[in-house]
Length: 321
Image 1 (tube, one colour):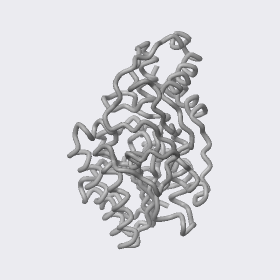
Image 2: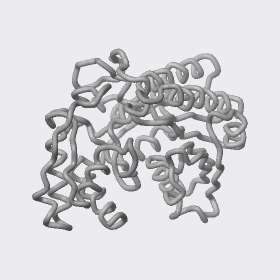
Image 3: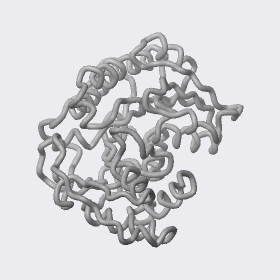
């Protein structure tokens, strides 16, 4: 079986590439390296069953070339980050909406068996209920959130109109090996890790009581595999929360990170954090219900935040120190 992974040089995409190569699939990676990194491909770039296509999902021809002969698409390519979308909504829309539509169209025309795509917990917007249940969403709070909701709408239309099987995975704050700690839009966990390792005083947004459902990368890989391979007709043409199903405040996160990092360097335990203003477009709390994924896909997340952080911190310390 042949899989196309768009954004395959990125954090999540490169982990998916490596996993599916290891279990025997042929994997094609499509990436323009706008946010992905070539070094993320180092472990498998010479694998006989791996092919890299340097291209852009905003170019329909690149999408058509990439899906040729492909059985499944795992669409990870996107411009992430709420702040980035606020600063540059046009590019975010161009990549996340126009690029997504290109990939759907190319997949439809190539008669791809199933199109699994990275959706986002940002789709819940101003919905205040916890835990977040797939069928109850609010109004988006950022341009990024709008683009990810539009993805779900387009996927549903392509399922109903053209018969393309689609499954959306609403990722909740994914973290783990290969997640980039550098750059203006780095995610909170790798950014905190690198700052602690450099003996800097990290700045966290707000009073530290905002909470998130932090989700280790191996749980996300499991969800992608289940979504791609399920034979349950009730499980396709829908969306799923992709999370562990527990929430952690930023204050708790800092404590866990310091505990894990201080096992390598005792000085880190005494580093204090600085509190800054809340970030525009952020929701206060996020917690996923994973009941739907458990029921229809047989999802059983293996890594809590404590277990995931232990793995992630070890990887960062060994690779970035």
